[in-house]
Length: 341
Image (cartoon, rainbow, N blue to C red; front, top):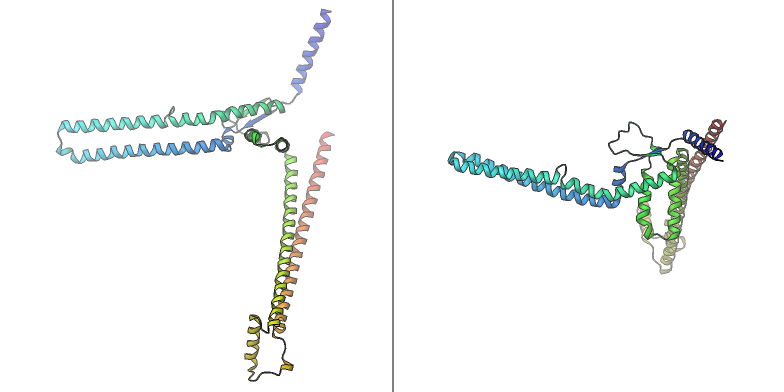
């Protein structure tokens, strides 16, 4: 019995070892600087720290200016001073210089306030990043995850192994978790899963790009149609208002301003000295509105032809994009079949 148990144990070890050797090693990397620069809390705190650093620099510059003024004053008055006074002035200047250098080292040194404040700002976010990296590595079986911004030298890194955006999505989701309902949280997680799949699969990213372009083209087409309908509606309302105004003018026995202008030009051109009989007088409003109506009709026809041409070009472009996407999909299917064979 003991021999059988030992044999089974050795067989399991051999199987696990062979599986470990045949399994592909998965490697990913993050860019900590990129992640920190895209976290809103860190950016706000960093901006406040930079304001403090600017204030420290101004104080150091003011100290330097005071020291230079004392040196220039001593240089100008040196011939009039005794040796004791000169030594006293030089001692004072040396003391101020040492004080200024000490302050500068305190604020901007290797272990100064600026470095320590930056480390204190980054540490909480770095802890969250490490936790997110561990979650991603365990969920997607990563063997190694490196930090691109660390001292590790990476001569080349393929973008598809970069999981920085996935880490950022986890951090943002953690910040917004308390503000989202269960349904919103579920939708957010589904969206993040799709984005993660796209990040890991370049072919899927290309297909998603084609789908986004098609969606943008459809939305633009719908928006153009909406604007066209609004333009037609506005034109119809303007024409209805013009007709109502003409009718009101006829009813009141007056002539609108465009009609008066047209009548005046006609009379000046013919040099009429007498009024025509009432039986032969034409309606000024009707005479005036005919050229305007013709111009509007020609303008509408021109606008219609232009929009029709744009729609045909847009339709042709969409068909070409669909054909290109279809060919790309067929080529990808053929490549996949060739790889499998």
